[in-house]
Image (cartoon, rainbow, N blue to C red; front, side, top):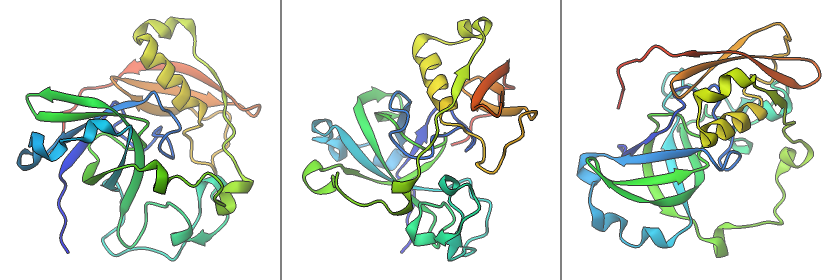
Length: 234
């Protein structure tokens, strides 16, 4: 079976570094789903605004492994990157078929020069992620609040204390600043990194956010510089 993207996701986050590790962790983070020309058909979206949430079936487009190169064991970041689990017991991007599944909130449908565009929130996707299918989220069948969640039940992300100097706040509007704070709060570093002197760089919109993380779980933004504009990809 050959599948082709029906749309692409657009957001202020062009790289994996800094993207929430699961959908819904930063519900304020907005993005746009722009359909390919052959799918810019209003009838294909008829009734979609009656749903609060959607399932997105998408591709791990930034994987750096060759097609068919996968391992039955992976090291989940939640376990510190040092414990092996079966690939099918995780959401690792390195799978036999590099497909992802995310639940996002539908905020609305906008008409644009690119046809009808879906405005969504809470995605864990990078800018330019290919979308292969969209399905409505059904609470009566898709929600299982009492379900066991394997190793995830015994671990949780420790949110960091984030310090952003006042001089950088005018660079963003209130919503952008709130989203940036929540993204940094989730600790975008690889989980096996613990160097308090290292300065990390995370792209966010038009800026590169540079920060350090100290041993007391405090993330300090040390600089914010404007990013060099690149020619946009699809």
